[in-house]
Image (cartoon, rainbow, N blue to C red; front, side):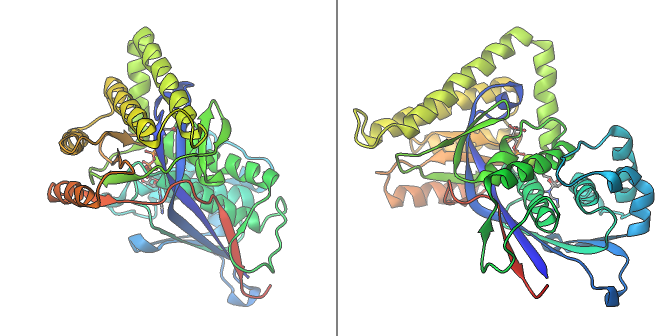
Length: 387
Ligand SMILES: Nc1ncnc2c1ncn2[C@@H]1O[C@H](COP(=O)(O)OP(=O)(O)O)[C@@H](O)[C@H]1O
Ligand SMILES: C[C@@](O)(CCOP(=O)(O)O)CC(=O)O
Ligand SMILES: [Mg+2]
C-alpha cells in the first residue's frame, strides 16, 4: 500500500511579514502542488533504510534507521497525536545527519527542508524503514509557499499511515481529511515550517492545509467567501532568497525602531481587513466590480509601500512594479520578498492584448510569468496498491 499526498502553494494578497508580528493577513491557495508519496518496505525487501528522493532536483538521501535511532532517541517516544517542537539540541543532531549527505553547495538551502523531513518522519513513524518521494510544481524559495506545501504534504502522507488518523483507504482518488485531522495536520506542518523559517506566523501552512481564501491573525483563521472574480498575474523575478533571513531582518528592524514599525504593522492590519471586506461584500451592492478592483489595486500599492518600509523589497521587484505601472496596473510582492514573486491585479475589463503585452515586457526582462487559479483545494491524500 502506498499513500500519495498533495498540498498547494499560496499567494499572500496582503499582510506578509506583518502577520509574524500579530497583524491580519489575507492569503489564497494556488492550483500548484507539492506531492509526497510514502511506502514502507515489506519484510522480504530486507531494507533497513529511510530513503528520501527529491525527484525534480534529482537528489536522493538515505539513512540506516539504526543511525536515526541513535541520533534522535527521543523521537521514538513521541506521539503522532501530539505535535512536538524540535529542541535546539536535537536540531544539532539532525543537522549532523543532513551534513553527512553532502548536499551540493548550489542546493544547500535544501538542508533545512531535509532537516524538517527527518524531524517529522521520526516523530510520526519512529525508526521504521520507508521510501518517501517528493515532487513539486512550485518554484522553491520564490514566495509561493513551497516550504509550507512541503511540510503539509509530508505531514499528510505520514499521518495517513499513523494511529492518529483514520481514513477509508479503499476510497478512489483524492480524499480530504476531516476537521479534527486537518487541525492535527496543520500543527505538525507548523513544526516543520519552524525548522525551515525560524519564526513562521503559521499563515502559509494553514492556507496550504485548508485551501480556499483565508484571513489569518495570531494563529486563527477565518474562511473568506469571495464575491468577485480575482485574477492575478504572478511574476517570478527568479532572484533567489531565503524566508528565514528576511523574517529575521524585519524583526531586527523592529527592535531598532519599535514605535515606527508598530505603526507600519497596524497600517498593514487595516489594509488586510479592508481588503477582506471588499472581497466578501455581496455581489451587486453599491460598489461595481470595477470600483472594487480600483480599491484593491490601491490597497496593494499601499501594502507594497509598507513592505518597502520593512526593508523586504528588491531592485528586481521594483522593476516589475515600474513595468506594470506603465500599463496602469498595480502590483505588490508576495511572500517574503527580497526577490521571489510579485502579484499584479488583472482587472476583469482589461483586454487580453494588454495582458499579453505586459507579460511579453516582463519576460523580456528575464522574469517568468504565470496566471494560476486561486482559492482551490487544500491538502488531500490518495491510496494505491493492496494492503
Ligand atoms: N520540494 C521540496 N523538497 C525539499 N525541500 C523543499 C521543497 N520545497 C521547499 N523546500 C524547503 O523550503 C525552502 C524554501 O522555503 P522558503 O525560503 O520559505 O521559500 P518558499 O516557501 O516561498 O518557497 C527550500 O530551501 C527547502 O529547504
Ligand atoms: C514573510 C511571511 O509572512 C511569509 C513567507 O512566505 P514564503 O515562505 O516566502 O512563501 C512569513 C510568515 O508568515 O511566516
Ligand atoms: Mg516558505
